[in-house]
Amino acid sequence: MQVGILGTGDVGQALGTAFVTLGHDVRMGAREAGNPKARAWALAHGPQASAGTFADAAAFGELVVLATLGVANERALALAGPDNVRGKIVIDTTNPLDFSSGMPPTLAVSGQDSGGERVQRQLPDALVVKAFNTVGNALMFQPDLPGGPPDMFICGNDGAAKARVAALLQEFGWNVIDVGGIEASRYLEAMCLVWVLAGMQTNNWNQAFKLLTA
Amino acid sequence: MQVGILGTGDVGQALGTAFVTLGHDVRMGAREAGNPKARAWALAHGPQASAGTFADAAAFGELVVLATLGVANERALALAGPDNVRGKIVIDTTNPLDFSSGMPPTLAVSGQDSGGERVQRQLPDALVVKAFNTVGNALMFQPDLPGGPPDMFICGNDGAAKARVAALLQEFGWNVIDVGGIEASRYLEAMCLVWVLAGMQTNNWNQAFKLLTA
Image (tube, rainbow over all chains, first blue to last red; front, side, top):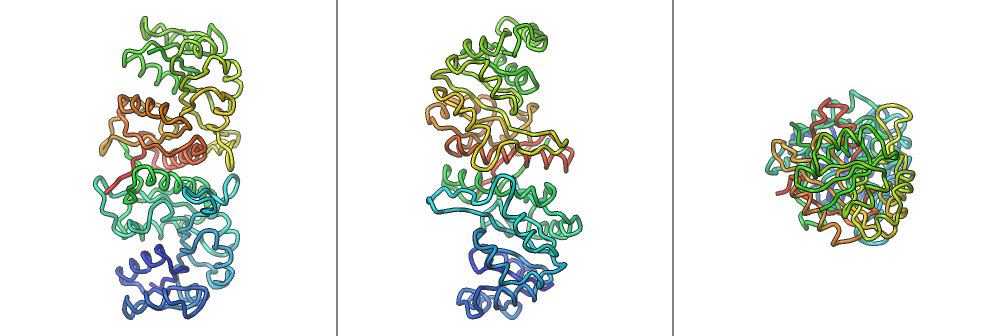
């Protein structure tokens, strides 16, 4: 499968590398074609890895992963081009975090809206699935935690798209819990803050949620 | 210790019974003194258990537990009387759930506010600690889950109050994670919705969160 990654940060690199490891072809997109982080990543990951603009990555991917800073989503998606993701699954890994007052961040979007809903509104013809937003990049692929596998909570409006993402997540080493339509991003993005605040208390960022069940 | 429980529903009954089991004296309060559920609970739980009004329970408790329906908090606390909880720990177990559109509920308070913050504002001289709001009543006391103990996420503005509640929670069988000031109720109340939505997907309500850590 061809995968387009929008974003060159830790999350984009972690997921890009994971998809290459699983045998997929990955193009990492950035605002500018010559982005040095994207080029370095592509060089380091062999012939399956390439780099380009957001639009290049979006057009390349049969599956597209949004891994920009949440507050930069709108601009990144405008550059990626909604037409380039028409009919495609877009995994939204982002959180609308506002770090303007330092740590802990707060949510720049909350209440009756969420980052995930904004992404879906900006990409009306894409199948947006929220995933990977309640865990740090270090554990996104093959999380090896005592008591695992942890649970990845996902949501989105298209059942078939969620089923494909769920199958991928299982390959990534996760149990998957579908919590509904894209509006459930309101809750999953808030849950990211619980993850952050807990990490600040315990000073342990190697943490991932699981719903223990009887 | 004397414990006042505000509310006669499943949560109030589960926590009231738990405190009696641990040897505490518990008064369950309701809107009206003769509330049959409170009286029946008190009769069934021996001499340590009693029933009264919200104000009776609030005055009786060295520790007070708010276990009303979240959307009824304001009225219940007005009846309980802010003066009756002055300087006391108030454990806020509630979620501002709006069931007006059926299942799943939504949050009646969200964005830059939360139920927990509203409780603290209404009781400015009480030490409000949010707890028990991310799990169902059946697992609040001695949760017996494979891979447990689960994590109880708490928040509140007073460190000493949180330490006392954390010690209690450990007696109840929980690991405790403190996620900060009462404003973190915004995230914990959203997390309740993840618990609800996951339960609806899996049809298993015997579930409690844990942060797996490496």
